[in-house]
Figure 1 (cartoon, rainbow, N blue to C red):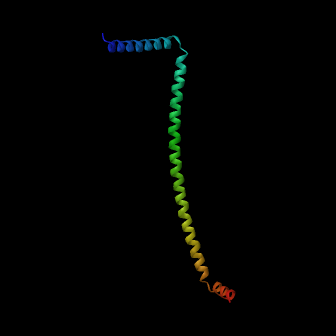
Figure 2: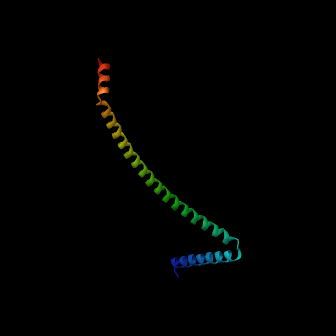
Figure 3: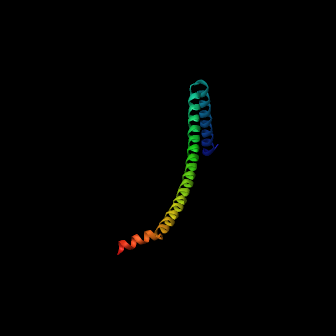
Length: 104
């Protein structure tokens, strides 16, 4: 048997001992199972929370963008109405007469 083969066999033996030791530990130390379950549940909970939070943020972003677009369009319509009102008022004879008197 060469050194490489002996080293590989030693690595396999070490890995097998680790698995057996872990298996024995998990069988004898029953308190470890609830801890492992808690760690797994915490991990799943964190993942679900991250997914829900990301989805909520995307949805909120889309909703706020829609509201912004609607508000901008409403403001443009309102400004056009104000401009039309100002032009209509400026063309009234009474207003023109008052401006002419003031400027003279």
